[in-house]
Image (cartoon, rainbow, N blue to C red):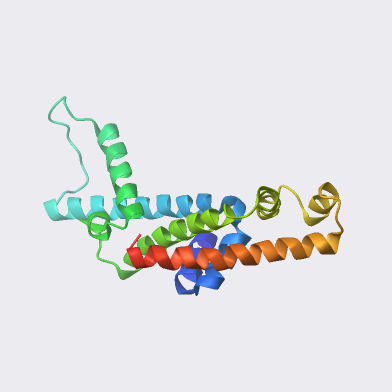
Length: 188
């Protein structure tokens, strides 16, 4: 998880072009990295909330069920979903309610929301490419085909394919910047 944590920290401090490079570098599993970190942060916040709640009541850690109506598993699952939803939509106040007021948590929640939004801005920019260009770039980013295979499949030379992919990557980068800034201006 330290790799994911450092990626989030690096992402938070990076400019837009560097953020796009980070997404391109981890394109094949970027959303999964974001989800893994969200889950880790959710677990941390959940533990903080439970600890603070028990501490507030003076609870010594012994739980006695007094009614037969309780559903701790269902309540936990619902709480997990609500917390993840609050984190994803950027409802920081709700996500941190009952947890420690930690500036790092606020930054992490906001950065994860931005990471997810930026990824989808890049996907949207890729959709503007022609079908063949889109397929080649997506395959290269996902690692399903390397430049040699793409060159062979398109009956073009290695260098020509490399330049074509770089041109398309540059087109996507420029359009993604527009989408990312537009999303931030809207407050997405």
